[in-house]
Image (tube, helix red, strand yellow):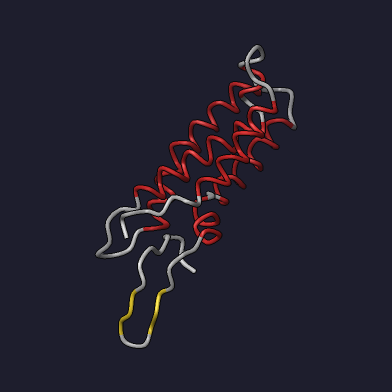
Length: 138
């Protein structure tokens, strides 16, 4: 199973590509490798008290947020096919929402606004709805 979402049935010779359903799209929209990097990096940062944790978390968050569309673009690139723009956007937003749901660095920076319930609700709703999006790029 490739990273790119398959939206059309293709037949060439003996090989068939099956169209990705709801669960396949959901799995492909989640940038699991970027999420895993965030878990590892934020865990390392939180394990030390000798650095400005919140500032470092923000820098790492921005770096991974910028890296996500590049990472997805590389992972979905196929010759003679257009850029998987929908998948890139949905995956980047998914990473943002996922970090927001985990709390840091938002909880520390926006103490008056941030409540864990907001992130949890947003993550659940986004996860349920996002896989209904079928990319038009093919």
